[in-house]
Image 1 (tube, rainbow, N blue to C red):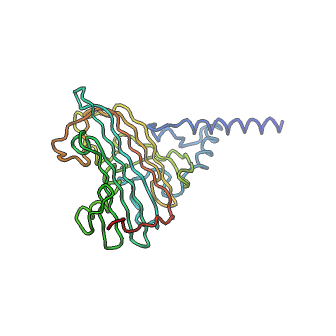
Image 2 (tube, rainbow, N blue to C red):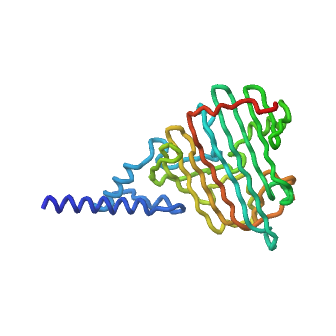
Length: 281
């Protein structure tokens, strides 16, 4: 008899675990159990409680700038990519865009290194050659590098690039709700949060009354111990959206329709990136 009770209890726990795992991005947080109405609900509630984030992160979080709070961490490296493939809206003309941002930071030395690669309609003309720019800050000094050639130090372009942040391009989320799903990503213990299109803050994309997001999937993972976003991935199909980042004239940029892919990952927290003066400067 005792064995049957134990087996029954294990089956209930398994059912609760499966119910918790079946939640996907886009489901409403109200789907989570809020009161115990049966033994099954009790088992599910226990699993969710065991996987709940720490206090302060258990219900919702807000990171309108995906790289917020990083200045308080000693060392880190993050990568950000924005890619688009589709057409100019209402035409068969192909439109392609790609940009990648790598940022390293050393708090002790007040050092920051930013490398930007971009191509396609982000530059205002798909025929234009891809660009590579590098900005380095070493305390009060800033350096600027174009296609591996040093352009000197102390220029406005050097200041602008050395201070460039992913949050200024892909933004983040005004709100995201906990799913109580825990994982280890990029060496950090993180919890997952779900979101909807209305939660977006993406400066690089300009939406109008005629714009639509027709399909959306994504992941948003936060490391409470650091108070930082470790992963923000979004893939969405859009219609009549303007990509403004790096455009020569954002006000006259043409709307596009197709697929936008955003990727942000934070790595190497606490690891010294060893930022030095660029070669040739």
